Length: 149
Image 1 (cartoon, rainbow, N blue to C red):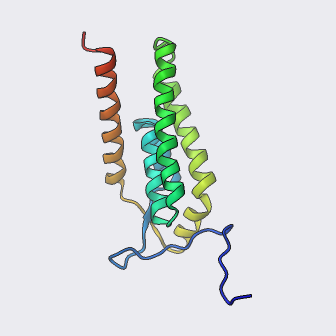
Image 2: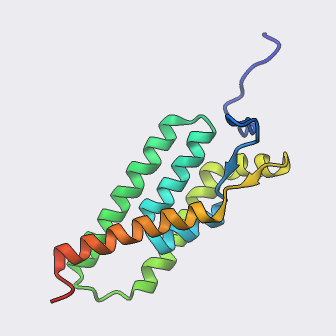
Image 3: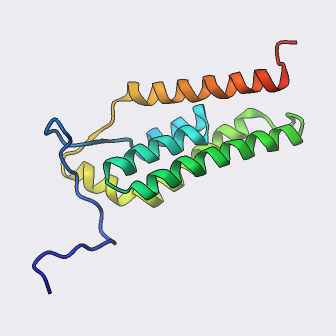
């Protein structure tokens, strides 16, 4: 057996980025807040950025695609139900789903990262992601349903 083997069931180690600093990861709480305020696509994007930093490219692609599919499905559901569900239901549901997915897929990585002295990704980056997705979705709803008429 070689001296160093890779165990796929253990958390990834925090690796230095191009500047020599340890990587910064979005916390499950930041991801849940992004999903609640910006959409599941925003939460999926933040998950994908974490996966990218952890060198899990396939998981990053899946996170983006599943976040977009979930968001588009929600928009379709709201359209079919004629806006009869209060928005708070989706905010809470999105936050709980994103928190569960983030903890389930990256919880061990995040715990290992923070216990090794790793830092959180900066909050302003999360705010930009949320603002970008929220603006996009509100714009799409305006174009599709003419909310200004």
